Length: 157
Image 1 (cartoon, rainbow, N blue to C red):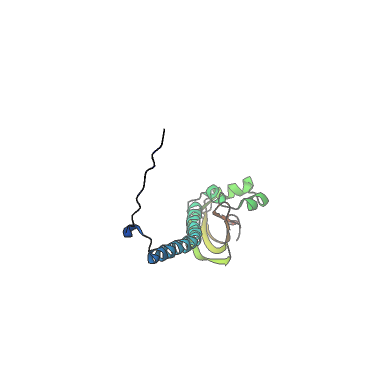
Image 2 (image 1 turned 90 degrees about the vertical axis):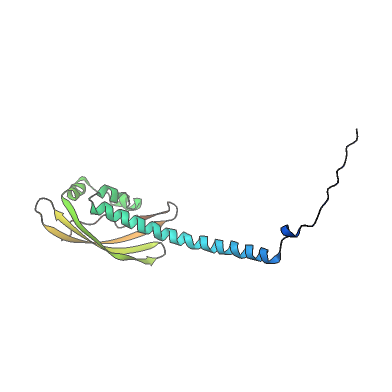
C-alpha cells in the first residue's frame, strides 16, 4: 500500500500577520500589567491593615476581648498569657468609646497607632480613659497583620 501525500497550500494573509507596532503595544501592556500587580501587593497589605484595624476596633468596642485576643501576635501570647483574673477584669468593664488617632508606618511592615479607649466599671459606673499604644506587624507568611503589644491595659490609672 502506498500512502498519499497531501499538499498544503500556504497563502499570505495580511489580517493575521504580526505587525511591529502591535508587538510593541502588547509588550507595553504586559509591562504595565506587571507594574500594576506589583503596586497592588502594597495596596493589598494596606487594605488588609485597614480591615484588621476595623475588626479589632469592633471587637474591643463591643467587649469581645476574646476576638481581639485572636488578633494578637502568637509570640506575644506565648510570652504574656492572660490569666483568669485578667479575663475577669475584662468582664467587669464596658467600652463606651474607642478613638483611634490614625496609624503611621514606623518601619517596613510595622505600623503604630494610639487609641483612647473609654471604659466604664460595671459595678461602680466610674468612667476612665485608657490610652492604648498599639504596634501592628505584617506577617508575610500568614499574609495578615498581628498586634504585637497585647490588649489594652485596663488597670492603668
